[in-house]
Length: 117
Image 1: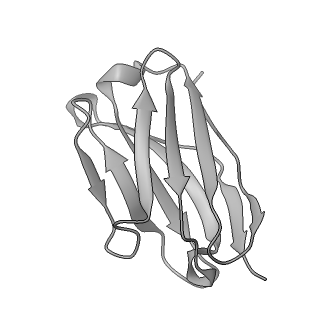
Image 2 (image 1 turned 120 degrees about the vertical axis):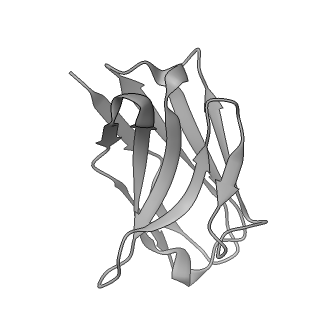
């Protein structure tokens, strides 16, 4: 059974930092491109960051320079370090595992991040 479980969300003040974690099971983690996406109320889900099996990273324009994605293959986990948070970063953040070669695409249930004073 595939599971992606996000943690680390919560309430943080503008300018603050937060680290999200996604623990996985049931997948060949090291063979998956891992990603973080987010969805704000009334908005479409958007890319936050991805990290390839080779460690190449890609970021959405709105988070470049503030967020950092990383992965730990031994722990089968992916992380998102978020700095200089803004109210517009408020959203549900979802973990994604994608393996194009076998056409699998898995999602976690999400963790809520609220940036507010």
